[in-house]
Image (cartoon, rainbow, N blue to C red; front, side, top):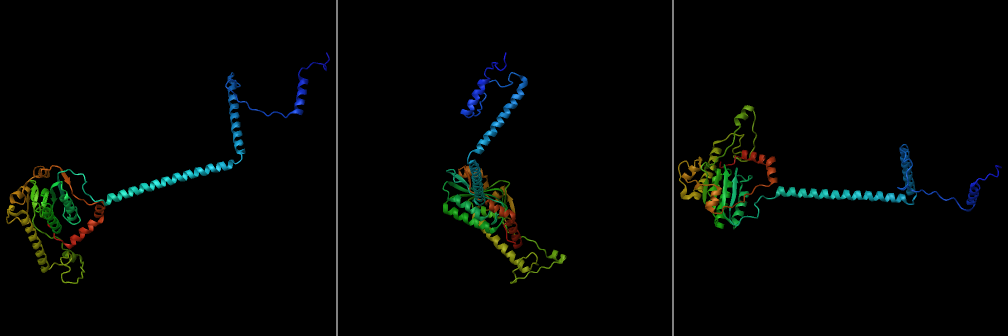
Length: 382
């Protein structure tokens, strides 16, 4: 057979067709066809070919991602879009930070105002009170101008109690060893005035002690109730202090006090005490004592069983005080409200210093005032 005439089907046709395609049309672009679920992946039936197929798939995905990123970067204006996104993100962060800053300032302002309110608010009972009740005003501790038993706080509470028409009576709940005769006198005078003005009964109820200046206040009440073991009395006046002249001589310390006036350094603890100064101080104490005695006699009247010891400064138990006429009968606060006033509901009108005043007293003010009082040797009913 002749090789040149060998019938090779298709070869000549392919050449002809490709030649004609090249001259007539451009080559068609390659098109990527996605793998469908129906198409069997290479190596799916062959376990050994699974790893190769997975690697090919991963490479295909990476190539696809790279192509997508390249296409995005090739889009016109992509830089502007990225910058806009960054700008909006920065703006949102600034807005969030500003909101948090405003919120923090509002919280700080609220806490600051709350602290001011707690520091400076006056202490007084609430407005919601029973229709009929017994008003209570406590007098506790030392009676002085800077204590809770001072005239300012006690009388502020007493006025509020007297002015409340639902208060059937005012009870002075006393537990005090005494204090300033001036503060006691102010309270006594004002209680008598309020009692006459409002026509409302006043009762004094003694707990632990009612001595000296506290008893000065108690006699302003219509009746005095005590416990059988209460301490009552001590109707007297004292002025105490210290003299350091002997110690200063031993230490070789000289007191250099210059005054304009012969008695300006009266009762100075670092200077010798003269006879005339001592007599003058004793005369002052005697006068205050007589004032105290007059107040007790006016308050107790014929109920007082006076003895030589009554105004000597001694004190007695509550049971003895009833026998001596210094008190009227045994009884507690609950007993007075229930049996005497017949208004068992109790409302406490007592005023107390606010937090700022307490802090001021605790951190220095009270110490300084106490030192001044000690050096000035003020008279006291204790």
